[in-house]
Amino acid sequence: MDTPQISAPSRAPSRVPRRVTAFGVIHVNAIHTTRFTIVGNHLAQHRQLSLTAIGLAVHIQSLPEGAKADIKTLADRFPESEARIAAALRELEAHSYLARTLVRIPGGRLVTRTVSYNHPEAAGSAQAAPSAPPPPEPRPAPAAPAAPATEPPPPPPPAPDPEPATVPPAEAEPSPAPAPSPTPKPPRPPLPQPLAPDPERQRIATDLLAGLRRDEPRLLLGERDVRRLAPAVAAWLEREATPDAVRRALTADLPHPLKQPAGLLAHRLTALLPPQLPDLPAPDVLHPLHDCTGTCKRVIRAPEPGLCRDCRAEARSRRGDALAA
Image (cartoon, one colour):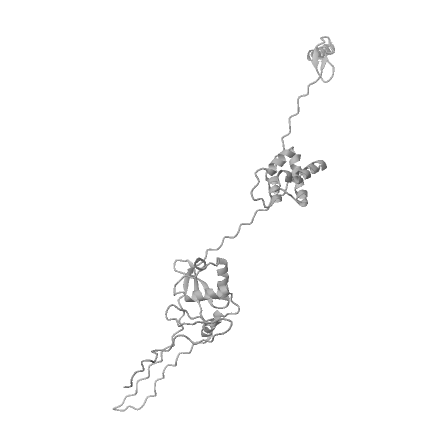
């Protein structure tokens, strides 16, 4: 036997010789033996996918079979938000790197079945290619004249059917609960309006709104807001609310910070509108004092001079006696 060459290397070096460039990317590649995933350049250098979608596709391809890849699990794993991860998954679906379908499992619950494709074009061509027809069954050989010492050879065994392409088991994910539809906000009630126009009351309301910034600097209103809110203040004044009472109602307990002073004043003028005051009862009329014009000369209260009650009764009785006679 020949003498072994001890100085010869046992195997080829793992590092690939590289050419040092003055600019650009410099690769230092080492051969992976454990924990690696093969990713094609069609994904790593995709022209239309975002960087988030490319990184998410690489992560999903590196997951073991049966691992969860729903939006909530991915959002807990990475710093991106659920909305950004959902958009990246839609990108991968649009470019056939991912397929998600709703299926019903035993028990009636709907789950999302996710299939990841590391090479969508190859998977698509394999699915589009027609399956090979099964080999024809061997026909029996024509009967030959019987020979005493020989027998016809047995027919060849049928060729096995081609194995169907195996699809990786789909991952069952719980379907996300449908987001509740937002409740529409009720329309804002209209601002109160005075029953009867009054220029003087309108002027007082305008001056009151424009001067609120003297009591509270945060209540600085624009001229347009003053004109819009003045009829509501006039409605308060029409209901016998004093200007000081209106000013206290509008400036008390202001929130901090105050972002929309005009909106706050419009809400208070509408929600805190005082009711109409009830009508006061008519006061009792005090008639002046007069002397009875009859024989008694008694002092009575009456709208005008005349007979007292007793003299009127006596005069009625005399008229009755005269008519009877």
